[in-house]
Length: 179
Image 1 (cartoon, rainbow, N blue to C red):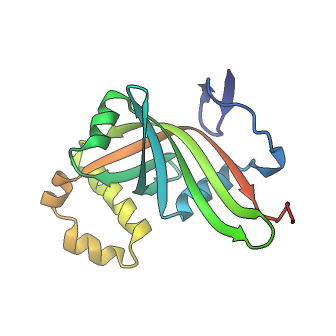
Image 2: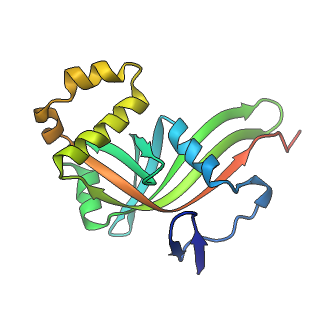
């Protein structure tokens, strides 16, 4: 069992985390891990129901002060059903720099995270979460907010928030293997 501290967050006990084998690839900086979450357009989260894994890729917004990820979805469906039974998720944000031809190597940076999902019911909190998402994803956020962020649209959409409890990072910046 490992107890991990994500400054400035509380210690988290994680039973299924083992030490990284390739320590030279570990991202040590919390700020660098947060940067990856802020930079990527999509994250993938894994959830589980009755010992069956389920993965989804989501567009998202990230609030570095609250250490929280926001996502939107329909108010019903498989993802909602699973998360109502088991709200613990593992996820990954990936910056893919691509396979390096002729070297048998791949350059990347990732942030992996564990967290708990809750769905926002409060109108103002939902609106703020949607504004976070829109600012991250749209080139004209003010226009989208004015045209589409109505009381009806806010009430209709489900907004999930992932409160991150643990995260780690890994990267390969240089070609290590050469054929």
